[in-house]
Image (cartoon, rainbow, N blue to C red; front, side, top):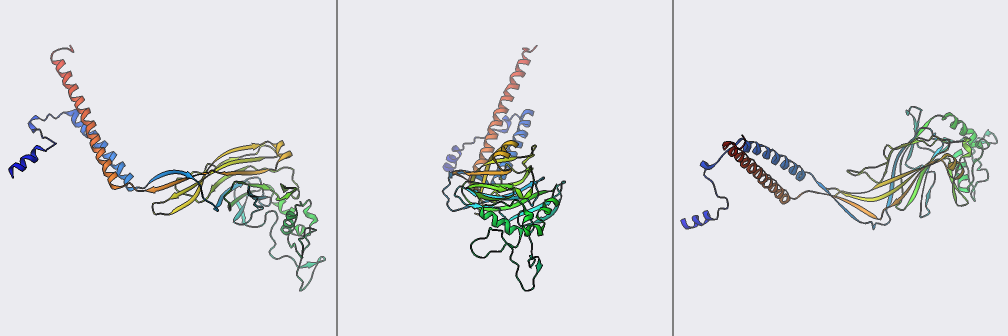
Length: 386
């Protein structure tokens, strides 16, 4: 037994020094306190990292197919009435969503930015909940009113009971409405009077649209859009205005669901038009993004970068439409963020590295200071500093 204990004693890698040979110094005490504080600070930092999830980032080719792209927007036009502005979405596959109304809301705002009213109705003119039942200028009992479409009827019987119905029928034909007062429905609903009453107001338009996940564009512009000779145009004649101020502020613009740490570079961006005609273009590069929570919840979203371009008054008047245009393209690379916890063994390894590393470095510093002080003291004793 004694032989075994003796062998174990010889294996001791940590030989002890008799306390009679210890030499404690003031500098050693200071270094001990400093190293203990550093150890504690690094330990707390490592503990927080262990208790909280870390996020890993990976890049891979986007091979998804058939997904939809959701565009969330909240844009304020301080000098463009709600009765004028419309939103269109088009993509390179040829699919078009003109004059989008579903999931799109508008708030009329005054010159000070205060909300006047909120609505979700047709663009350009108020909806008539119960159209007048009249014929030949007089009401008829037990007769259903069927308004004329003024030559824009589709094959078969069709009624246009509101100004919006007539304008929609004209849009499908590729026609423009030159004089709304010549249309009985528009005159009865006060289409032009509504525009005049909203003069000096602005509009906050917000909501979302879901489209095919391919490159395309969406834009906010005055007037109802239609195709004429395969060219996308907007009918501006009904508003009887010479210019449109498309100054705007982007309160929010995102592609897909929000996720932790997302940064949308256009949030809070604004542009002020200083000329009668204006067109502002945003060129957006959308990067598909997947965020995997530690609880296995997966968020399919997107990030994006953007460049901007403003067109001058004369070029817009002669060649382009006034409005705010967003041209977006999709990156072939998908970014994946994955949350995970640091393993306990990794945490334990780092703690040991902290304690051992700080202890070793502080020992080197203490040894350097101690031997330096001794050398200086010896030189003073022999009078070299005199």
